Length: 504
Image 1 (cartoon, one colour):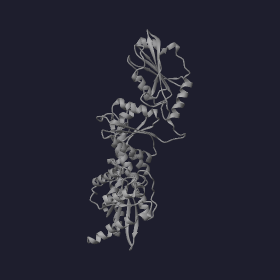
Image 2 (image 1 turned 90 degrees about the vertical axis):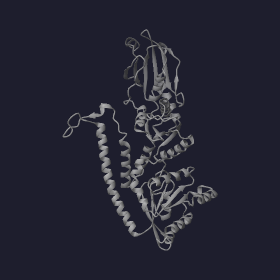
Image 3 (image 1 turned 180 degrees about the vertical axis):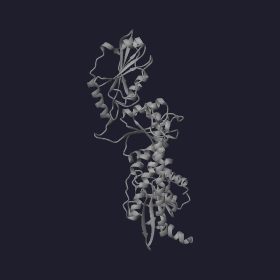
Image 4 (image 1 turned 135 degrees about the horizontal axis):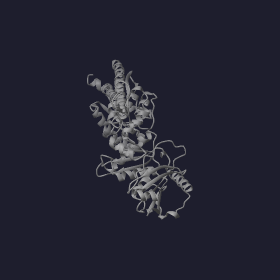
């Protein structure tokens, strides 16, 4: 290698497997080599890739910053630079990753004369990988995704941390194991890769060192940002919207919900479909397929558009059926009370306790997506219809708002909205503001509302009392039927007596 590299005045490199098989021979230029995609040797959940890189340095110089970055980004077993002097091997420069993740995730060995270098590589790499696995601390058989949550914003750090706390709850709802959080506050957002390239590489290297299989960005990534970051690493990269869409896809059970979620997913992905050069192009045969052919990317886009059209048509049919059911309810003349609120505030639990029903509940965000309606009987033989709706959330993706708009439009027919608030959540005031913003977006902000502070058993009584006075609200514990009397009285007064008083 030294002789050939000296003769052609280019760096040469080889990638070697743990079995001693050379998988790649790389010819670079005088300054460096370009490591190709290593798709045949995926990293997966392993701490190291199983490949070592040995390459030449024409000026007998040590490992460069780029060499060490490649070592960390690609999770190579080992990297070595063979110094060339007069066409012969001279100094041998080596480095390897360390079990600790941090500012310097690698250890650079002192240079030695090439002919004096000796090591038991198999024993060394086995010991290193075992220590890496031990420090990761993953339980045996753990199959969940391990995620690093990332916030890159110019907002206040406290606001970013609060938003990351909510993102962690969303990750929990999607059965993701959170192993770290990162907050970055750049002077300005980079339109191409969100934050500086050096910071981005450091973030990826740290995530790889911790064994992360997923990077979740709290901010919605543009298509170009998502592609750039994904091309830089084998770790899966998603943003807040994709995480919410994943939860919705898991939780939707009714046909309405499944169609709405798939429609939102396809609209989101359409602008993010991308190909990888001419390798993805092909010719189409048959009528209309002659000529230069059609890129596979365009075929994929066309199929997505066709699917969106079909789903939109099906959604219209489902809307028609929903409208007929709504008309039937209206004919009965029963008042409608709709329960709204931030996700995981206890809406479904309240519905179950009020109506003695068994709608699915779970202490997770967006545990239920499908609308449920139940009948509630008051004294004096008075009945109302109580409906539970999908939970709201801050920065609800536009595609989801559009997809669920038909469902949320049912709120227009409600005589009263019960806005359920989780008083045990330290961010409940921001959650109230988020719900009110969505109601305004849906032109429902003028609809009569009654604020219901839930989980009053988890807050001091004097605090609950003060909040009730401040917001003209009712405090309840949705799990305790004995606390619901004030709520039932308030609903009965607003539905029946207010109507009588106003002559309705």
